Image (cartoon, rainbow, N blue to C red):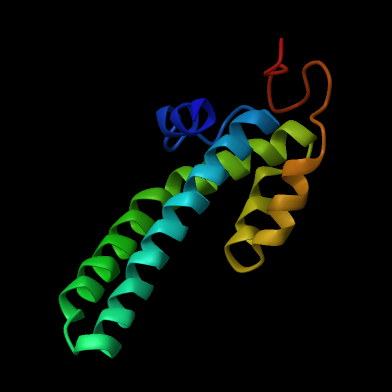
Length: 125
């Protein structure tokens, strides 16, 4: 949860570096939110199939999903950007993560450069 709070506190900060702990702490919470919204949406479809009522829940889940997605796109991109820079890769590589998230997830597993690099001081120090 600390990684999520840290990433949100650096909402649109694309300079510097992020540790793996911050990146994965943020991403796990984002995934859990997405799963919860997905389950809410699935529940709405089960209600529709069972009783014909549940469209209201589907609408809430859809609005919630769009709202949360829009609210989290900038911090998701910025934490991925900083994570790339921690590894010594240009942050712009995180833009690939919009189309192919697996690229940034793999970068998220790589240990960061020890000591300062061209993107800033070591966040572990």
